[in-house]
Image (cartoon, rainbow, N blue to C red; front, side, top):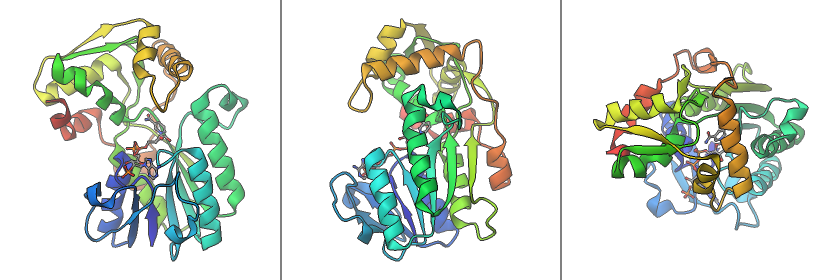
Length: 285
Ligand SMILES: NC(=O)c1ccc[n+]([C@@H]2O[C@H](COP(=O)([O-])OP(=O)(O)OC[C@H]3O[C@@H](n4cnc5c(N)ncnc54)[C@H](OP(=O)(O)O)[C@@H]3O)[C@@H](O)[C@H]2O)c1
């Protein structure tokens, strides 16, 4: 039995399908099973990870856990990890971040700090582990969907910021291999998982326009305005500004090389952003 947190999310939904396809038994955690729309073959279990005191029953009989910080935040993830140890789970695959570099620089930004803290907890847990250090999720482009649908215009501080957007299905596929692996080849590995090609914001917006069959363009705004637009329940203005400035630095200095981890781990090349845009064309139409 493999327990999947964030099972209705971008990575989780894809992962549940992939694990079931491989014949694994899956327990999918969600706050609302009635709305989850997950396959009937999965055992879909109600769990609000921030509001449940005893998490051990969620892991009863499980061999492995896919842990995603998005499902309730870092405290919830740490509590679930403790519960996994108590329940006798053997392996955890952590959805981490390529912001983590295992250097003192990890203290410099909150995304790295957050994920590095959880990585430490996983290493200290004594469980078998694999880290999926993804970044620059292609799904971040869904934030542009309302403005693309309304006007075709995307407002960004750094249209030439460069990224290597990764398809959620590739993150899920890497996680699935690590969860199911019997050879031990992926234990103690931290995979930096990127998409297969470097692309600017402007190129991504153009690709979405092609897939959705509509005219799109990027309009430059100030860093302050961009941070304001990103600020919300999960992101303070200060953290948003930190992120916007980090994107700005990628215009002249791409932060990460393109990784071949998807191909190395799954045996097939990573999905392109054009493919992602086609898969999500309905979100932008
Ligand atoms: N975006 C990036 O570029 C990036 C880069 C590096 C790392 N990451 C990591 O990836 C994560 C996002 O993964 P994702 O896109 O797959 O997530 P997502 O689509 O946002 O999914 C999150 C899921 O978590 C569940 N959830 C939320 N609150 C919960 C709670 N209190 N208890 C239980 N479940 C809860 C929700 O399901 P229900 O509503 O069904 O409960 C939701 O579907 C980030 O948090 C970060 O750690 C992201």
